[in-house]
Amino acid sequence: MLIKNGPVIPQNTKDDDTTVIKKPEEFDSEDYRMMEKNAKAKKLLYFGLGLDGYTRISKCDSTKDIWDALQVAHEGTNQVKQSRIELLMRKYELFEMGDRETIMDMYTRFTHITNELKSLGKTFSTE
Picture 1: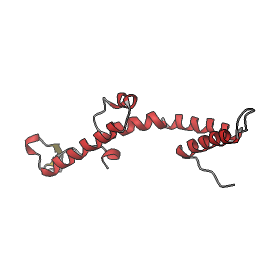
Picture 2: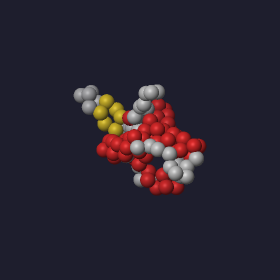
Picture 3: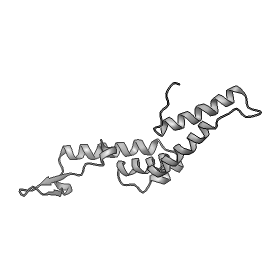
Picture 4: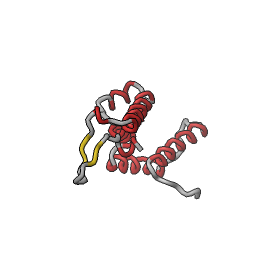
């Protein structure tokens, strides 16, 4: 929930139904619990990355910001994603065995193309 929706910011609701951010001295145990969850989620994302990944997200403030940055870095924007699908579909349609390629190498290359397409949301029938 924190990753998709962003961190929970402790707030109070006034009598006129407006909300204001709580001051630290107004935090209760639930507020601290939610902030701790955000910190843990952030740490998990940090520890799952290498140095290159960390440098991409080191300036992000929340887990949602980190997640969005990683999503763009790995999947790209919708336009980039569509371009990658088109390129891979072209490779898929023109796929053939290379002159000095073994059956295993050819199968590995084919599997790589189809797995990348699946990860981008493109599905295939068993035909």
